[in-house]
Length: 320
Image (tube, rainbow, N blue to C red; front, side, top):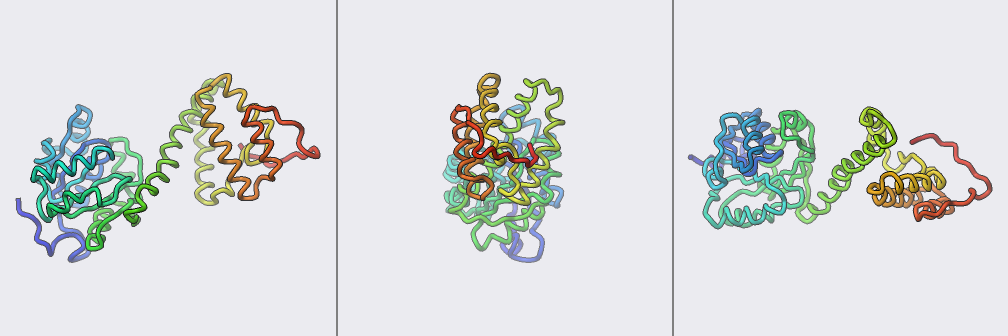
């Protein structure tokens, strides 16, 4: 296969990247969707590696007609290779591909890990590859809907200075928006995303389970408007959007929550306690709670029944 001449590499000439043959190593939920998005932009997926039956079906659905081959053959056929394997597998994969001579000089090698920048690709870079880290800030289902969701999706991008235009052009062609992340900041950046998105799924799933236990027949329908509004308010206003019994200082309500969860849903209690303590700390730091209210909340979270409010105070703010 002919390699694109240096003048035609993305970012070195013109406003659009050269049309590239694209390969995917690891046909999980991410790789086929990104390759399909690149196909819509005029690039040509030519090969993918897939091990499980589900990954083969996924590749066939999103990349029809694309050959399923081993990783080395993917690199042999493609100008741009997407390495879309789990984070912990990425270093050994890169080292193995470089050691066996699968990497070709001038080949664009892009991984989609949030944890790593381009340093993890150093073995391939020493073999002549052009390293990119393109992490889509999106959850993936492994279906065609993922391609649509890439429209306006942020990508955490790390690349050598000479490849920044190439990286940005590819992200934009996939429908995304590049956000530049320094190499040293990648682990912190990824931790922040996991803190919000991954833990949100756990919290919502637990909330739905407890609502079912309380007799709610359609917890998803009940939670949808509430969580949508809470997310929108949080993104707009940060801690000022805090509502609910912790932010109001309703220690008695919190104590009842603790008792009910201990009796009926003990598996959810550690998460509730941790998040309530964190919420109380943030509400106190931002002046939403008085110190005496925070103290009563901590008593409630420790399993104690709080006494009367000092001076018979009562809050009247509404909210969940």
